[in-house]
Amino acid sequence: MTTDPTPRPVTVIGATGKTGRRVVDRLRARAVPVRAASRTGTTRFDWDDTATWEPALAGAGAVYVAYAPDLAVPGAPETVERLAALAQHLHVGRLVLLSGRGETEAQRAERLVRAAFDGATVVRCAFFAQNFSESFLLDDVRAGRVVLPVGDVREPFVDLEDVADVAVAALTDDAHRGLVHELTGPRAVTFAEAVAVLADAAGRPVELVPVTLEEFTAGLRAQGVPDDAVALLAYLFTEVLDGRGEAVTDGVRRALGREATDLAAYARRERDAWRTADLPG
Image 1 (tube, one colour):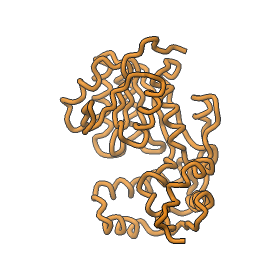
Image 2 (tube, one colour):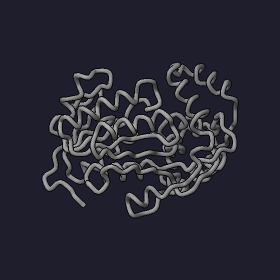
Image 3 (cartoon, rainbow, N blue to C red):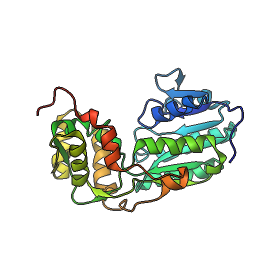
């Protein structure tokens, strides 16, 4: 194991996002200096403004790269490739790329980044469990009806606490250089089974309501969701959540020496997200 005795700062790109803020918190708890980079942060970083890139990276010992909104969007692989090349040029010691499992463009981004940055580490993830408690499915769970264009496809939902632990390990230890950590939970379940787990933890009824893709996207647009976000979610539920990601991996255990967090344990920990006082019943 090789760690920095007097570490240079770690730049966390996407520091206000679901994974980024967890990475920032863990690094600070270890007394590792952090540059929390975002469009509105003290360390300014904007994917659409390349003038912000070098100041955020210069002098950094490592960089965590979480591309927003997703590596699947057009042009994303080439954009992260340019950032990785700049990080290599600036002699950043380590680069950790957050990636998506089963996404063709995400895996192309991985290849480009690994070619541009010597020893880049990839953290490739299954569907985030926290999408139910912090993201676009939270309101549905609170309402007791999770409306999705899914059938019996199974998914090994991964806990973002595990993802952040793996990312921090890779940012602070050379033992992870050049590796691809493919992270899943310990078991694959259907979305209906997952929703039942959430309902049990919350102590209130929650059901999965399967709909067609057309009904799903129409509902999103009726809620005012922008067209690019609608297109991204449609891609996710038709091209990624089609069974290709059902296999469970031991990526968390290989990276951390412990087992991945089960969906039920996640739900028990996060149950207050679905137990607000204004809920019916």
